[in-house]
Image (cartoon, rainbow, N blue to C red; front, side, top):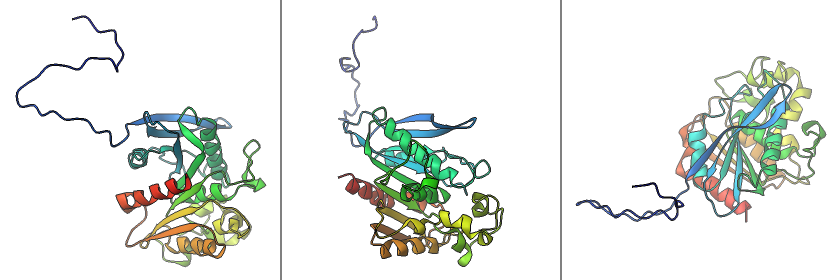
Length: 301
């Protein structure tokens, strides 16, 4: 038989049959997912930075976009490590872009914040290509990535934290999701931790240029998330999750920021994940994903 010259949709149904087979009508109750690997979103000197983009195929409507910042103690990231977990969000009808930023061994604060803002700008510029609604942008991160996501979401209009062509007088995203992120470098060791956060070679010390954290309050101040929280300053809503047994980023970091958000009358939701350690699977359960989806859907209305 010669090959048929017809479209996929017009290809005829087979009439072949065999005893015992079980007919089944397909039910399309999820999305098929695509993956765009190593999409360049910005060039820094002689280096290209990439996004890993996953999203639903053949969605009928423009979709919300989540830009995800992976944790890495502010060092170079394994940006593809969370793609299996991020696919859970893509299957729920979101385009997800995992962002690579310059690690502190390459460029110190605020490089990571600037890279994240460049990633948001890129996805807005390419909204049509990736079938996203350019106004329904969200930032999400875990650990140091969550700190960077919050910095990018909250620091709009701060000249030192913006670049020409990407300056904004309004929040650049609709909302932000914080998974156990640091919020104040200076108080990281006020609670028990399995890591020192004060020395020049600590993650936080490296992020401010290889300096002792407590000896350089002028370098720490612009990294403190609560310093961008004021009652008369518009902020995107934030959804926070933190484990009570976090051995790397103390649980009190979330408490400290949430208290500041409440005092400033900002829209914030803080989930205390009982018994959870740093980066565990507790943060990718159906319950957590349901909460995240509801948070995003409400803000997109």
